[in-house]
Length: 331
Image 1 (cartoon, rainbow, N blue to C red):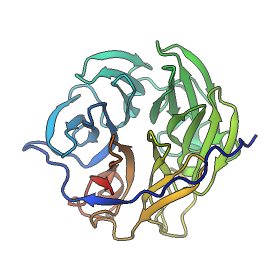
Image 2 (cartoon, helix red, strand yellow):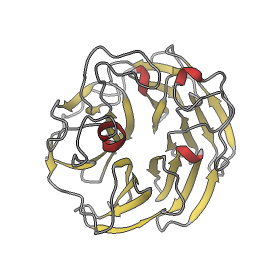
Image 3 (cartoon, rainbow, N blue to C red):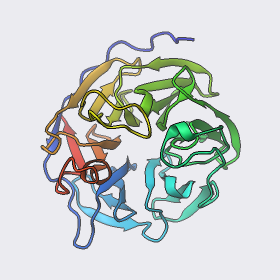
């Protein structure tokens, strides 16, 4: 089923990088910014590794506070802030979703801490998944529907989407490992946009769209390795996109023939690309090494977090002086 077009082509946005936006206090460090979200006051929440915590900034980059040092595993993965300013943190290494107030008070936990579901996943290659399982096995992201339902992409070790009630009751699950319609190879992020669920099917280079009940609608197959999704109030879809590197094999997949830089897409909700920028000089201001998180504030400024250390430094592609988060002002 292919839905009818929903809008005409949106106005093309323009951005410029804000140099040296993040101002970390002494004693703080991170090599990866894996999650980013903005609250109703335009404060920016960033989930970081090395060290694993949540950092909070004003829109001008002034550091406010942090939390989570004694809570999160070394493989925290993503965060979402809902319309009521609750924070949902996905901890892939702990196989949980935790719901917090913005003052770090724990409200709910989905999943059993430290216990993955039984799918046969070996922690390395998605092809090792033998069967689909219940929540969670190295999950990746949450999205909140207007009615409060919680959607979770369950991501590296399960290739499924789960839907929960606002109280945390499992309502439905769908998806299989593969590359056909309704199948996933690392569902890495998702977003509820009106009556559709958009899923970033990372290793299949595409965006899947479903009804709220999980009925397959269509595939947008013109997006490279999408890692995160954000839809703003004007109906613009922002996508963070990882690179492909020639000669590399990702998660046990085929060896890549070409090097394609990571970047950012901006689409309308019909799937039309309005903006796409990427550059081979990954560490230059405004370019990207490995975008993993993307969000926007009320002014339309966007924030992009990158897995600079995990993808770039560890593999010898860049030095550890390369950027991990950048702000882009909308012009």
